[in-house]
Image (cartoon, rainbow, N blue to C red):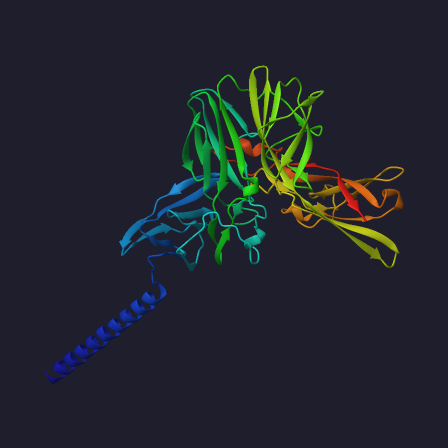
Length: 491
């Protein structure tokens, strides 16, 4: 009997110890857990592990998670659990296939928070009291994988002259793409777009936002509507931190004209300085505050540039082009076409460099202000590197300079630096010759030749809801982009 009592006492003591230990362990777990996950009603908190992705956000935010099926084609993914908290909402998603998923969180008046799923990590980002949706700041260091959008431009599917002709009732899906793209890496290219904004002047079309970068346009009455497009800054979580990508460059914000009715036509051709001009890819470059270009179109009744009528000499019109978007209207045979021509001021810096060994005076010329208008674009454009070996040498994209001497023309290539940011490839080193000079001055004709693997220029305009796949038959292409005034350098 005593032994039974003793065993019973031992059992009770063991049970008490077990309960106490369990309570202490639970308390420790709660303490650690609470310490690790302190949620803030003015923050986005993201927690990844191998099974789940947990997002805790202010309750006045909206959230979307998508999985990439094709380039530019995403499928929305539903959460597996939603929990309302004090001023917060927590969303839980399956994280087993994290490599192809992105998230974006919107809050009125604040910069969008977006990012890529990961298999582990805890991240938090606060909403500042005041946020500039159109933030433009100098970057400190580089964005991940060198994905620094130097000029922060954009591409559209509107066409080569930024003029879209519709009839009443006709619809058009306007698609917009950031240049350079926000992607997770340079091979899989999981892409995130910022929020695009449209300001319309006119009532001939109706605009409806379908997605952050897709707008449905419907022609509702005869007339002209001019739209100005820009995009907001966006903060993106990529691997080890949040990175802020600038808003669009206002000097190159897109200006499109939608024309509805029989009074308009696309079928009026023109050239600029003898070259077929693509409003999306070409820019008129000049060193002064404006430039002059020779605009040629046959049989026009009127040509109006920035509201000023221009007189013709043998179907040639001298247009004064300012920095930014210039609007040119052409009237012919009772119909009109309106096109956008971009101008940009460049800076040319020349510096003498003496090679003591060879006793040759060289001139180093840098050209600043060029636009990187042809980006890497998944499945469509992939700028080449300079590669001299093998059976398929490539040149990269760089500036060429032509300078006349008494006998011929010397052509000099710029130093190649970068594959994706070819604005860096504009430093020229040339040997100075007396036959180049006239009254201590010489002239350069410059040209920017862009080379890429992929589709023909403009192929991005055919992207639809299905997206596109990897281009397994990418061809090598090259094209001269931009119109340059002759460069004069005094010594």
